[in-house]
Length: 132
Image 1 (cartoon, helix red, strand yellow):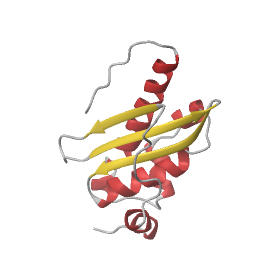
Image 2 (cartoon, one colour):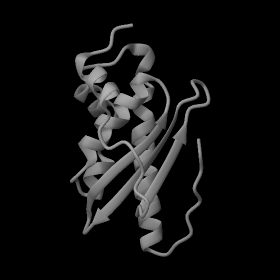
Image 3 (cartoon, helix red, strand yellow):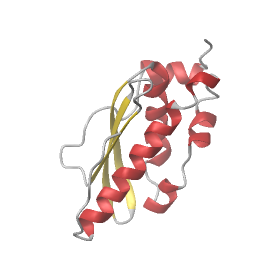
């Protein structure tokens, strides 16, 4: 299986890995088919993502796609972050093997959940946190 230089760099040196203890929003997603699990934490200032961090349990592609996603999302408005899709992630990594394309969906889905969680908390509405 061929991994791009960018993917290997993000796998070996993931950006923004870890947790944000006082996160404004948290999103969690898992893939029961491959066993990968991603959790995204966000900190919002104004309407922008000030911090984006992640935890992941998965393959090199899952780690790298989530790492690059955090770089793509950081500094964007919430609406701009919601526009990031798996093709943006794949492009930023210089491509993915076809069998690993599904990994790029995990981070974006968890990011969308984290933004929804933040918006529900801000509006003081109940939020049902679903995994996977």
